[in-house]
Structures are given as C-alpha cells and as structure tokens.
Amino acid sequence: MADAPQYKRILLKASGEALMGDRAFGIDQKICDRLAADVRTVWEKGVSVGIVIGGGNIFRGVQIADTGGDRVTGDHMGMLATVMNALALRTALRQAGVDCVVLSALAMDEICDSFTQRSAMAHLSEGRVVIFAAGTGNPFFTTDTAAALRAAEIGADVLLKATQVDGIYAADPQKNPDAERFDTISHEDMLARGLRVMDTAAVAVARDSQIPIIVYSLLQEGGLAAVLSGEGRHTLVPA
Ligand code: UDP
Image 1: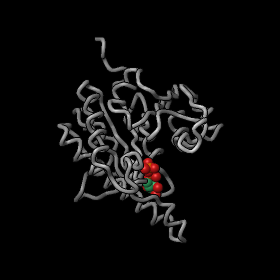
Image 2: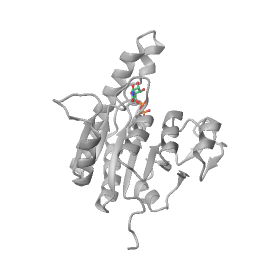
Image 3: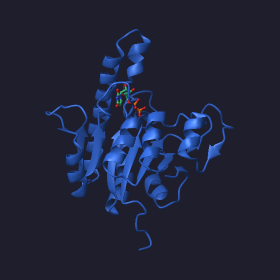
C-alpha cells in the first residue's frame, strides 16, 4: 500500500504553549481543533495514537517557586493545568469524530479515569486515542518526561514533539534567527549540547528505550501526517 503508515503506534507530545497559538494565556480553540483534525487524519489511517499534553499555557510549577511558594504545590497546580488541556483536547477530538479517552496520572474519578498501563493498552487496542493527563503524577518532572515514559509503556514506535518551530535548533530560533537547524541529531548529541527542545530526562528515557524522536511544528496544517510519511519539515532523532 502506497500510503501504509510507517509507524503503527505513536506518542504525540503537544506542549501547552503550542495550544496557546497567538494568545498570551490559555487555549486557542482553533489550534485545538487543528490538532484534533491532524490526529484524526492519522487515526483514520489506522495509526494507534497516545497523546501527552503539557500545561505551560496555564501554569508551571516553577512560577510559584519563583515567588517564594512551595514547589510541590506549584507542580500539583501545573499537573491540574494539563488535565484542563486534556479535557479541551478530548472535546475537540470527539467533535472531530475521534473515539478517545483521558487517563490521568492523578486520581480524579469524577472527571476521568486514572492511568494504568493495562487500561491504556486496552483502550489503544480497541482503537481509541488515549490522552494522558497529569504528566507523570509526580512533582519535579515535566510532561516531556511523561511523554517519553508513556511512549515506552505503550510500546510506541516514535515519540513526536509538536512545538511552535519546525525542528531542533542549536539555539532558540525565535530569539536567534541564525541558529543552526538539524535534519537529524543523535540522542547523545542532544544531551551533550544541552539542547532545550526536550528535557534531558525525556531524551535519556527515549534513548534507553530505543525510541526515535521527531520534532515538528504544530503550526503546519496536516503536519502530523506529513512527518509520519517522511515528508514535512521535521528533525529526526533516530533510535
Ligand atoms: N508537572 C509535574 N510533573 C509532571 C508533569 C508536569 O509536576 O510529571 C507540572 C510542572 O509544574 C510543569 C507543569 O506541570 O511546569 C506543566 O507541564 P510542562 O511544563 O511539562 O508543560 P509544557 O511545557 O509542555 O506546556
């Protein structure tokens, strides 16, 4: 089949900031709908999809620590922010006709089911998109690390990070327009160069689990299907 998907199961990490679009805070419904449409395109082709959503568009734990507050409480607030984003994305996916479920690393029975690896595998094998909320469930971690962990737990063939730029750069291209861009880069080089596109724990988990990473722009319409078929601008970190 000409357009048979190269990857059978993917874990997509979308940062909270990416959901913000041009806004200064919160969720841009247009971006949420675009992400849902992109996911639907690959889901309809039979790709099994897990999604980890960030929370930085609403709250990051370090914000409270910066003002002398308690970091653990701040991180709890950050994880709650990811649950809000997960519910927004679930709504957008359901409106797009995609069967999906939210599983949270922190128990909140009235709102969604709790994450277990068994339930995630069962939903995925029944063809449901699974949105993983509340990160790892632990303070002092990030949703990048949660994404790498969940990718390993569900046996994903690739970890995709959807950002606001089209790949991995030696420096932030929004601050430094001349920054070198990589078509491919190894996990080791990412760690050695301290590239900040993903945190080091996430890169180490992906490397140790031999999971390739793809970084691409959420702002490219249809970008997810394009990068999964080897087209579209992206940076590949091979397994
Ligand atoms: N967070 C946490 N543990 C996790 C994942 C996230 O404590 O396993 C908290 C942390 O405060 C973080 C916030 O949730 O700042 C939002 O997550 P993240 O910064 O990874 O979101 P993103 O940058 O992807 O929007």
